[in-house]
Length: 189
Ligand SMILES: CC(C)(COP(=O)(O)OP(=O)(O)OC[C@H]1O[C@@H](n2cnc3c(N)ncnc32)[C@H](O)[C@@H]1OP(=O)(O)O)[C@@H](O)C(=O)NCCC(=O)NCCS
Image 1 (cartoon, rainbow, N blue to C red):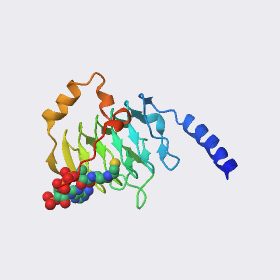
Image 2 (image 1 turned 120 degrees about the horizontal axis):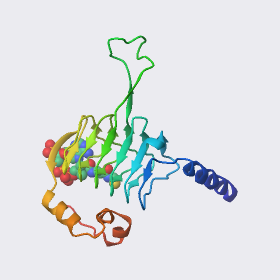
Image 3 (image 1 turned 45 degrees about the horizontal axis):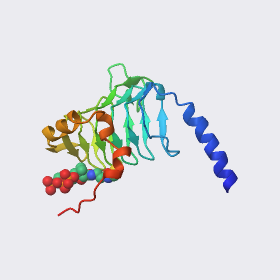
Image 4 (image 1 turned 90 degrees about the horizontal axis):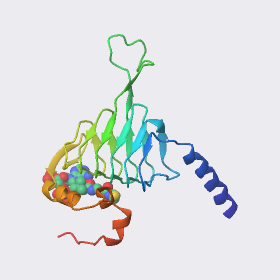
């Protein structure tokens, strides 16, 4: 068993070394064995990004993830789709043209479990995407969006968020790892 784990770890380190992202900031955690990255050379990560296990990102059309972003497990991001509806369509259900649309996820976004983010979407700064959402349109800064298709149900306190960012020497470190030790547990009412 130990030998098997050892071999798997060697394989894993070679696999992730060969990913070669377009840009990778400091302190990023995304190397779960269960995650899958297509076209990683078109994928950029800011600082302190955490992508949970079973993340699947197709960055063929480019995916940009800002600093302090957290993905729960099982998030899927697509930046390309098939051509199924142009005037010159020449096969069914789609032809061999690929349509690329960049996805942008700005700083401090939290994406809940099993969310699907579709091509061309921009998710605004410090937005929250509820578990299981399908994001088909842009989400504004500070919004909380849920459901399929994802709809904004409320907004976060933007003043509070901006104050937190302004009062921190290294804003990206607001989010995670270092601050994990300071997390307090609140009981919901
Ligand atoms: C999005 C989220 C943060 C909102 O939390 P909240 O502010 O406490 O939201 P509320 O409970 O006030 O819900 C507001 C409305 O959205 C609905 N809603 C909340 N989360 C939803 C979700 N994931 N999908 C669909 N609807 C949702 C609520 O039912 C409520 O609807 P109503 O106004 O018709 O009653 C939370 O529900 C969520 O999905 N968290 C992610 C959990 C997760 O993935 N954890 C992994 C750990 S990283």
